[in-house]
Length: 305
Image 1 (cartoon, rainbow, N blue to C red):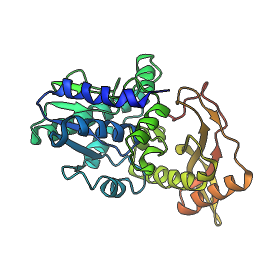
Image 2 (image 1 turned 45 degrees about the horizontal axis):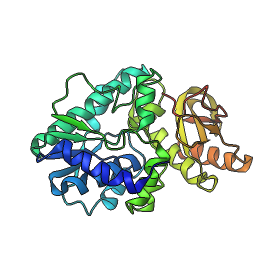
Image 3 (image 1 turned 45 degrees about the vertical axis):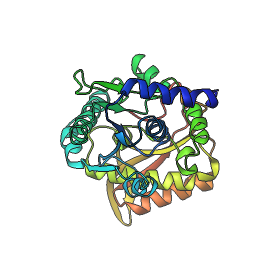
């Protein structure tokens, strides 16, 4: 476990030394990793830090409004509507690694544009240790590590929590007195719902995944999962009313974990699973069936792509 009394001042000093007298932008997603990185960077360089939240169109239900509410104390917060640019870049792409690399490059280009406006030379990210391990080990490219383009228009990328696991980041969040909503928030992948949509990313599949994830997080809150999610994994035959439909298949997943490196699928009561399927199929006429994923990590990963 991390010694927060030592880590926090050392991280603040390291950030200040790396950035010097320059300005920086922080890639803010609203999750605990980027929020901790933002708090540490703000303590290090103050108003020379510009928080940037990019609305990719791949975010959770209500995410952008929650970002505005949670971080309204940061007067320099910038919210960038980049949905059209991300979906255009992803059009026709089905390979998971290619999707991650496209998202990684698109993120960097968005931050480069914002950095020019803010006269910033550095990018601060909430990259954590499992991101690096999975990217460097070839398991999957994280958008902020293996998904980065070869050429980046920054003097440096600063990653103050790069050596921490998720549970250690949460400890730092508590030590920094961050809002409990942020400190204890369920992990959400950097590439967003794109990795919860098998195959091409479309508006229709994103809306199904977004609503289904909202239902799953709501219904399984009492189980206190490390992560709970829903993914659109394909199509199958179903019946809606008196009509045969060829609709989406939604897979529900809920796991326990300490650091995300390994995970155990949770045992969920039948009644809870039935409520979930009823809400998901009832909210969208194009969903034909809901299944529950019982696979641990390994052999599976927590996310689908």
